[in-house]
Image (cartoon, rainbow, N blue to C red):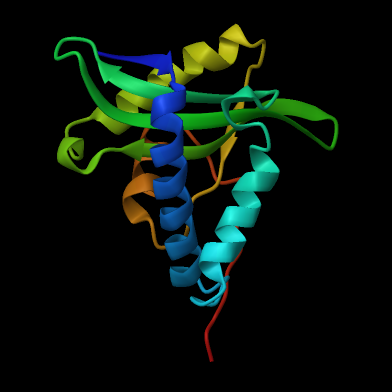
Length: 156
């Protein structure tokens, strides 16, 4: 089983660098950003979203630990958000480390997240999935997430 532990300051810097790089790559693949602008735009986005790092109010960044093995298998970041009068948890990042993928950890992390979200007094979770990330979409649908909005684009 997976438990979520607050991310340490030592883990945060490397996590943020990796996440920003991956986010930039996803934005390029999705067609939203040009490759030459992506690293700068990703850095700007993260400085805006986490201006105080792990101390940024209403943001929760966790390391996912396999309790049996005592091993880090990934991480998850969510924020408490209010949009159009509704307050909910918004998942900014779920990452299962490469060597632990396809072993059920994504689902375990998301199930553990539900408990953390309840602990901060929320009763719903929203997230975004890039269109090219079919594995993530399948995982979220499997555990009960529904599409609430859908953007599409055609390259000419």
